[in-house]
Image 1 (cartoon, rainbow, N blue to C red):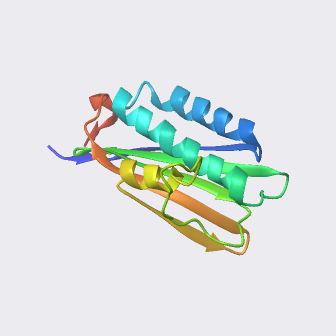
Image 2 (cartoon, rainbow, N blue to C red):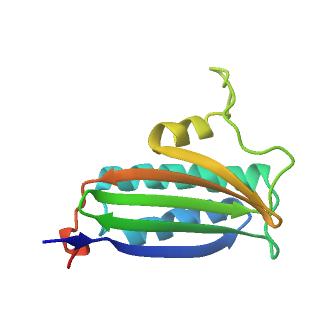
Image 3 (cartoon, helix red, strand yellow):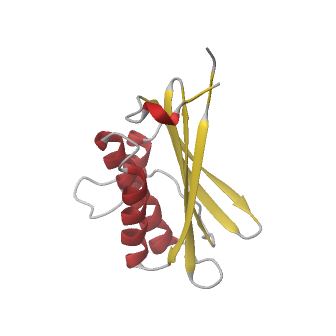
Length: 149
């Protein structure tokens, strides 16, 4: 018996504003809650909130004053792999992990992303930048998403 992977992808556009992070979190949670474990969903929501929040605070918007948020779920025999991507208009200085003072009110966001995601990175093109975070396979809560072939 062989199996092949099932893949689903979502893309939403949210305002380059504090409400954009809330809208993105709610949409991701609504789409993935029936598919992934609650623990994984909590990690995904936390990472997405950090990435969108950073885009709002530190980067320019895309044309139209927006940020593009996407995620892709690939389910295979070894579990679910998820890729989150937040695309904005870019900033003068790219995202990087920096030392955070214990008493500082901010500066820990990418530490959170790095701690929860398997890996993360930044891609730039002529239109802006995308910050992505990938989560390695975790056990699936929906074995019916693995398609037997």
